[in-house]
Image (cartoon, rainbow, N blue to C red):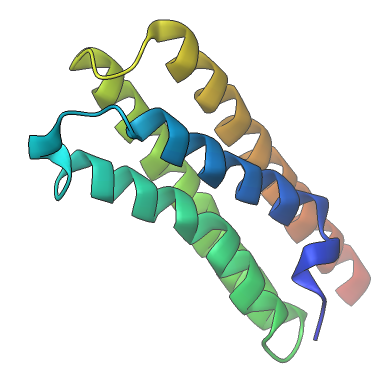
Length: 120
């Protein structure tokens, strides 16, 4: 079992969730149970899956949950684009959040690679 709080990627992902919550706070009220909820859940899924993987037995299980977290980064990236296309967020906000998301995905790839190398 690993301490997820010690992972830089988890800290980055947690920071992204906080930023997403702030950015979506101004979305239209009719989106509360639509896009607002969906993008928040997708963002929260990233650090949640990292944490859950760290609580499982072995690196193989952690790797599986990191893979799920990577999928959630793609979902967040699309939902940010959708929010921008609907004029719910400014271009600068979308670009910054997307950069954070892409960086997290790269970190997840790196962590998975290091897990595979430890295994060999």
